[in-house]
Image (cartoon, rainbow, N blue to C red; front, side, top):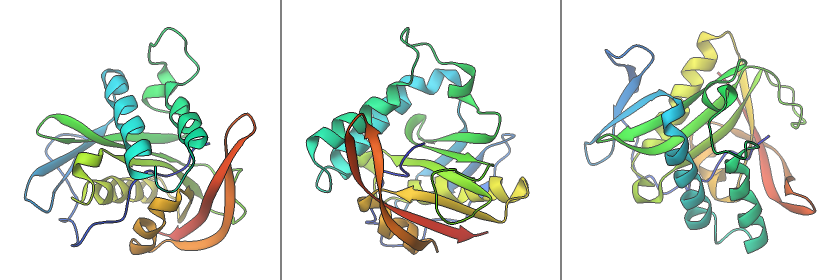
Length: 206
């Protein structure tokens, strides 16, 4: 289970239309300053870049909303269970979902994760769950998070899902509200042993 996500709602305009590119399985759009964002399926080579984006996103975008112990435990979640640092098959693409990264000029600046099963940690019944949408602080507010979320929703619809749910971090609540997600309940998330932090359960129909 994961909180989705450490994006901060600071975008001031709608992102470009998300469309399939000529690269199979990839999508592209434009940032607000007209840079191309390529959203593609995650590969094993993306592991270190994803960990870096995750840690920077948590500390820099969510830092004012959570105490240090929560932030530390939250970033530990990105390391996974494998001690040798190698990406496992499920780190790349889970059997019951899809993971994507967003690139600008060849650099990974965000990642996302959607699952096609009803999340057991949500109160409201939904068809699937958004597990992550994280964006590099350097491009926060440029439409990268919106591109990643739109790609997840397109993928979910293509796999027959009619609704999605998630646990949003406090800093991401406005982002999801802007994209049509409704608040179900204010709750908490278990980040580690004896470490909890506030979160917001949200859902949307596709």
